[in-house]
Length: 355
Image 1: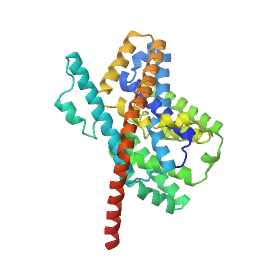
Image 2 (image 1 turned 45 degrees about the vertical axis):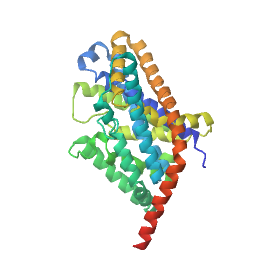
Image 3 (image 1 turned 135 degrees about the vertical axis):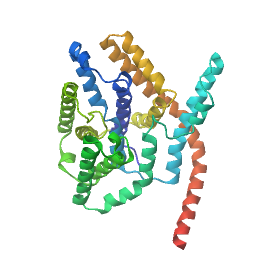
Image 4 (image 1 turned 90 degrees about the vertical axis):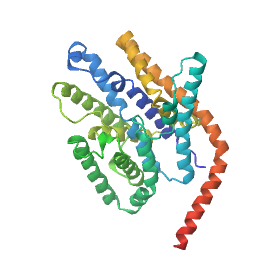
């Protein structure tokens, strides 16, 4: 088995931490109003800068997927769905047990039935990523067979469509501010391009990547502050914000140039997706938001910042720990799934040959 690159595994952990931190800011507390900026300009500026810094998390994950490419088999799809259901049902079971012990039932049949639903209004990412897994072989073949120029033009045209139709005018709902399968295809293809072809971006120093990323944070923050006085339709905190996309690429490229191996990082990174499944569970995310709002109401800004970062770190640790039993169960199921997967693929292969 090929050894995982610890620099990229660390990036997975950092990206997930950024996502959790993002949810402690505008997602939980709402967007600051202009009157708040007049009384607390430093605090509002910090919140916008933090949001700009952390909002790249989802895009980083897709860039990683594209960089190494998704090569799905029936087994990998089953493993993906199993992890989702494990967390969905597991959290419901824990909450149901808590209700029985305390005599305060908080789980009913509605919550139990919802645990089987992959698509909810909280986890748009899951169905979109599942679609990306299924289409990845076609995207991989296209990226591999087309020329560097053609692939670059494809990315450019899709980027322009995303920026103008999906972000600038919002007349193309398929982009949905970047929360969509189409937007994931753009990022995935960018990741493949960076892996397959040398370019000025790939070959420049890590220091330049870091400087460009910090410049993005500064520019996005300044525009966000200006936007408070001069509102317009485009949201700076959308996954298809053009300068945010560039910032995510710079952050990603910075980590590709770090060269180190650490077994502990690789082990921790196995539970990265568990953090997302824990935090974004329909029964958990409302509690998360309420806890952040409570801290904001009862602490000064400096104390709140430290407490919110602590909560984010706690969720990351909890998600990784909760994924350990899932990994153990999957190891027991994996041989059986592999046999079934091989038989299914052989059956489909023979059917195709007969045709």
